[in-house]
Length: 636
Image (cartoon, rainbow, N blue to C red; front, side, top):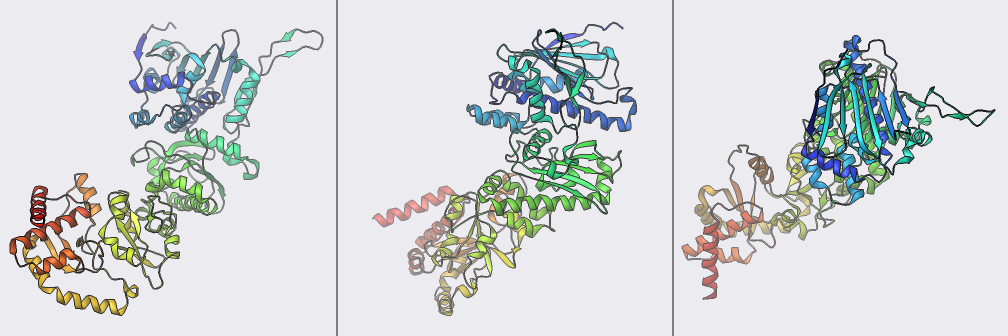
């Protein structure tokens, strides 16, 4: 059959051009990684065909002997990696090889620092394995035929790593893909068969598909002529790693398998390999990554474990096995109880899945708990990457709320630094005798939180307070409620009751002062009117003249600001205006007979309380006008 010529030159997507430039200039310090990435892609293509053939067996044809073949042509200076997997159509080749169809590309490019080592790690996080071919190749040719299509519909894709690539229609006898690397002049080491075999053993021994290469040519016994060997041999173990006993698998093998399933270039922090037998029969291998992916905060992005049924690949990113707040966990789960034709819809309804999800969630949390116990410094690195996602847990997973709570880390007034490295157990261990609440303050940043006037009495009495400044924190606290029998208390909400932390003398003095300033409270209440819910004397302040407090059952100001910035309608709320009877300005206010000066001074104190909590003034010009007026009167 004659193939109709159909050849065109197309331009790379702009982001792809930039990545190609980085690859060609050898960003990777470890060049041999290109072979791992191409073998991983070939393995994925075979897995996808295995799955597709469950419903369309005709896709396999007569070729069901899956393998990945590596060929070296020393004269042509090429390496070819061939698979008999799902293959690609013309549109697939243009889409997958000419563009980077992945969210966060721009963010990735903005994150590049110019430091080769750091940038190569970023590329690893982003996962653009095919482009690593250009580290060693001056030209890359991809020939591919999609399963189920005619041999005349095969495609050849060619690029020299510059602005354009060529795509043409060719004839190919068998489905699958061949990637041909035309090596750069200084990359001769990869034309050596033994070198390639060692790389395969190092990086792809765990791949469940046989990786084959020609046997090395040997010298005959009777003379020095070389016998040409055309027989292929399997280089890797070709046995699914998770099916092997833990005692048989080395740490290096576990690490390389993680990189295979996650397309991450960095080592994982921890992993857990477990086989369950009984009512359910399944094996899981899950990993804790070291670095967050770029799409971590896109909750709708694909995520989850690779699902196998009886060692047959079923689907990537099966999200049903872990809750959303653990979306950073990578790995595989292989079940003997599920049907080979299982779908995402069936997974959502299968009661066995819920049981597996419960067990896998607990196992993932156990990995983190053990890490926190064994290596606090390593756990702190993990927390910096994934802590904010883990904070989604208490709202999404009531069953494991206590377990998740022990994994949370906070800044506190005890450490005096914007470092989230204190656990709730640490806090409770330092609580004052008789203290029955865990106190916290929430603001839009660490500086605003630690300078909140609501902390003044706590500093005076040396009572530790959690300092919350992540956007998610106040939402977290609305679901956390209590820990280890101790209730959480927002220091900016409701009436302050320190319980036994205040002695009887202090309480009696408070009652006396409230009676003395009763008239002042009435005058301020009348002046502020609808601006506030209530005016009252406070004993939570030592340095500030006043503060604003939210009712116990109302939304905190930080949460309100977050919702408003997201364009959500938030019901109106009036705050409680608390005044400090010991502050000189309040004492002066109490003695002020002039109504205009009383009004100006009251409004200045009120606006200052708004500013201290990080809120915007409704009438900033009036605040400046009143303040200037008072300053002029003082200097007259």
